[in-house]
Image 1 (cartoon, rainbow, N blue to C red):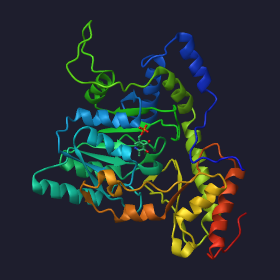
Image 2 (image 1 turned 90 degrees about the vertical axis):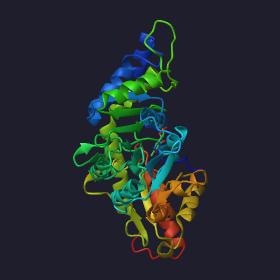
Image 3 (image 1 turned 30 degrees about the vertical axis):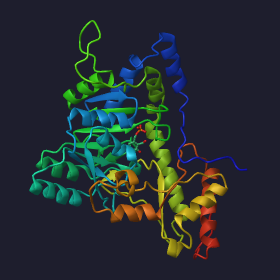
Image 4 (image 1 turned 60 degrees about the horizontal axis):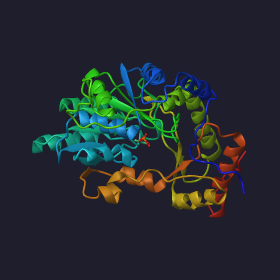
Length: 386
Ligand SMILES: Cc1ncc(COP(=O)(O)O)c(C=O)c1O
């Protein structure tokens, strides 16, 4: 059996162990310490925000931002529908209700026009949502200027879910700099990883001071243990921050590698009938966290799921695109605005192995199977793989 090719495995830089050695030598094996502070400072400087707080996961970072807004039961929060469940789950933790908004075709992210329609409808009903969660899916920025301008008209804060998008840019700025708050994930499958972890970013010092307080069990300033609020154990460990530092050293190389992988797939597969790729909006530069194909089954002669199974038979992991949240059974009772674009992307989409350590031989392995999936079903192959 061929060696397994994973969708997006961790790729260590080789520097993590020296940061970890410093942690062990200094005995900072704790959810505090100099590496944690350094990780926050360096990430904030890299992204271009004033403050960052390292959190145990991206999900927890979003939870803390929403907690700060003091949502009341039954209040609504607008959220992209084409995303992972973690973009919406913390809304429910707070007793609020997600309302899902469809994607625009050019970024696959929250459609500013639908956002404007939804906010106007909410205003007419006299019940504005408390926040907007706008996701940068697969490493491409949403149209954040438009989203933030529309939300600002109604004084609704925007949280940018940049979990997948570290290293991407939009209008010449790093993602995560436009909205009131943003967060990144360092989960094992992300472009850089600390095995797990997240970072909440903002220029709002009050938000980040509150997040820091809540993330460490909401301990009041007293010599004894005193609590006037319910907190969480959400702080990132200094040990994991050291891994994060070793990864942050190479973020730009990781983006370059993922973009090269995308270019390779596109160059090798774009002639296949019925195949297209996730578009890149000219206002930004995606980190191409995952290369996402779109397959028109009728023209290609096989469905994305057939291709996925064919890859799996050769021990290659590929995955469907995120199933839109408005189609998830757990969110069935939630309101939504639109949904057809996200559904189409889901139906046609396939995420290909995109790990930054992939070799050219690995890439050829994936390409040849996809090409054979097309040819074997009678699709019109117009040239053979190089
Ligand atoms: C779009 C999106 N939002 C949120 C998250 C949550 O991040 P974490 O796994 O660090 O909790 C993830 C990834 O896992 C994600 O892909």
